[in-house]
Image 1 (cartoon, rainbow, N blue to C red):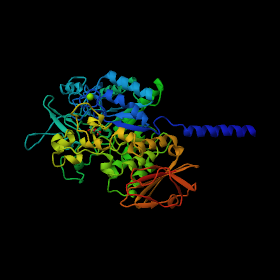
Image 2: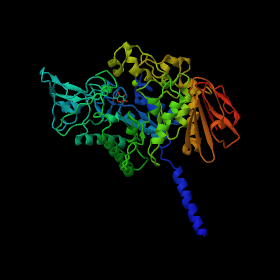
Image 3: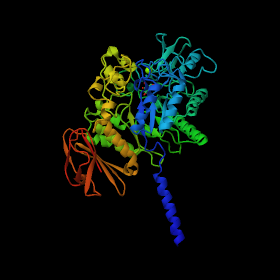
Image 4: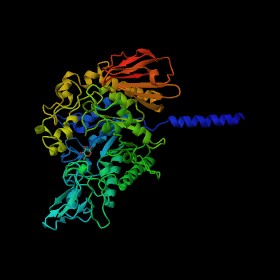
Length: 578
Ligand code: GLC
Ligand code: MG
């Protein structure tokens, strides 16, 4: 009898231990760097790899586990690095391969994983592969998506192979004089799509991944995933898409159903294959699991499929969760926030290997406070850090940087320039890409140059910079650091269940284990509102203290409250009770 009890205890203990043990990324805090804008080490007004390396201790200090870099590879920089002309070399303004090797060393020393941007959908039209492909080189001729012109039977004129549109507007097809065929580009004309129906392309891109894995990266963020494959009929033709009825702009993607140009099953299989490649690599070479983050916009069910499919194939560890970013804005109610949070939590696949993640900003969207409300910087950081799973922060959101308005004639983002002076603002990505604000010296400590590639937001002089916020209690940066520390240290945040409640102006999040509770009260409404822990939950304790307060909360950090006591949470403020 005694023996049996003993065995039972050992088994039970090992199950508990297993449940508690997490892989490095599963509760990770990730940080996105836009390399052009993080830190300029050589005074040319453009951020670079050496600059990034010099700031890694800062990222350690604020508790980051992984850092992902937007592309650093050789590029004509038409789309600021998302147009790559060599996947295995570094863009000259950013540095050299030796600089990246050094950066990886620095990261390893600090215990931070470096994640690089992998852009498989398209290359630059300056990539040697494209130049060889347009010249019909036998090995490279099928590297891109080529199709013959359609001849209009009435006019006799040449026309694109079908009606598909590109994401940046106008036909997805571009005529190539040299090859006398059209090529497909989901993005800019200068970003021809690679053809993943070619085994040679698959092999080459696998070699690119291995090249970087061998240099010691912790994984990849994969760009523009839904667009990797397009439907091609067995006779080699590309079918027209039906009209969606969703917008009137005949040149825009919303005009068409996009059923042949996005989310094809082949794309998912490719991501699962890359997952297996990284998993095999880890098995062979040891060390921590190399991971995949996927950038895919679209309907939730399509995005969740990147986690894996029902046949047991597994894909992206971090299929970026844009629910809040896409579904919520300054006019949304707390109920809207709740809907979008629950959407992900309730629909994501179940199983220990599937972990939620939260992304509220990136290099393609306006700054967080410009979208969610100017006084909500701390509250949004609280939201992201207190939700379960993985938190992703776009550079500068920890100090609550804001958009910088840039006039059309100084705009450099190709998407905005294409949109034209009347509507560029809607799609302009320059405002969220301005240099990181380090201190209040000239150019915010970003560069010694008097001119930077994008202007520095002058609000660095009025306090929005790392140095100022570091030494100020209750600053955005110190709130952020505290949140990150809590996320690491509190079992309730690591393992606790999550319940969301929308009550009028308040979004309330309860995190709970058997023995502890943590409550987040965020006022995303239009008026101040009272909150007591016992309003919505059964308290485990008599008293709770405000462990983190937003800058605008009027509540003293550390103050104790009875669980039944009403506390006013001002509009746009956030308070965490433990
Ligand atoms: C992704 C990137 C975006 C880029 C596009 C084309 O959507 O996030 O910045 O312009 O791909 O590469
Ligand atoms: Mg530089």
